[in-house]
Image (cartoon, rainbow, N blue to C red; front, side, top):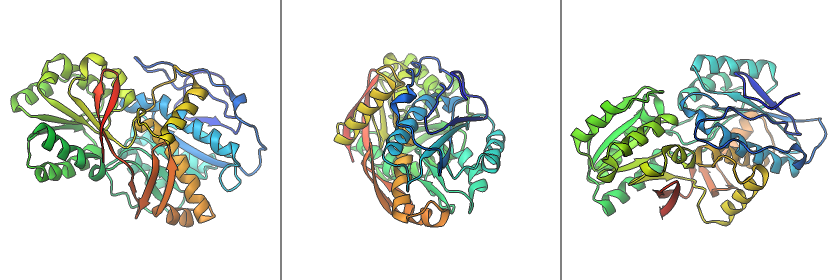
Length: 393
């Protein structure tokens, strides 16, 4: 049914045999390794669980699409090999959540009305989540996986990603105590995640005895950062906190390094993972820190097993997997645990079970309490094209 090629604006269907076609290749990233569907055990076609996964294959956050796809496919293969979820084999369909929000919303509406989607999953910007939750509310379970601003309470929406209180706050205090960071400049993409995160971040900076000496929001897709860097240089911050998304973060951090600011000014980012680091380049990562619930270098039994399976399934040259992409693996592990606790995949019992649960994934044990995800949080320093964990909170 499907042939190798690029993802279209609509639906990429992956039946239980997991026929696969690669998302568009992004500049500077390795292509997906060839995928062998025969590695995955085939089962019958009855009683499938249809999951619509809204990943971003285009625009600034599209850089995460390949790793997100692989992470989801790995989870599906493992879960289906062991009987699926409540005896239902997963059938996964991908939809592009890039581009104008209105177009993504139409795509989602069509998926819900015509594709018999049982569960929606999403790894996309929060602006898309705000639109999709209006479609899924009181109708379809919706698992939202990546780092976000927190505060999601819409019935049926289960958000499992890092939030500022657990992710950014300890990193700010560590930099204040260990690097004497006092003066902070905040720069983020112009949408809801940076807006809301910065409001909380300012409180944490004050707690740590610091002050904000500048803040700005950049239109998504902006790649000319000369004016931003000039304002940062004039403000003389100790740290620049970066909440830019995808390729926007890459172009900013490249320009930051090339300007010479990296030698004298620290950077702390909440969405710079291995995928973004590869795009930034080794020459531009001096004094760059990232806080996250997942890095591929975490030395744990759970992550070692995950990385071994990821490499075995997609090859040594597969796209590097970082927090945003890997969250899709976590989302399916969470869904399985919540469904088994509820004994149902219906919206109300599933959402109730998902609000207070402990599940295990590559990040280790993750605890959801009152809809808030708690996990080990790591502060890492960029070391060329790799990260080095310097503190776990």
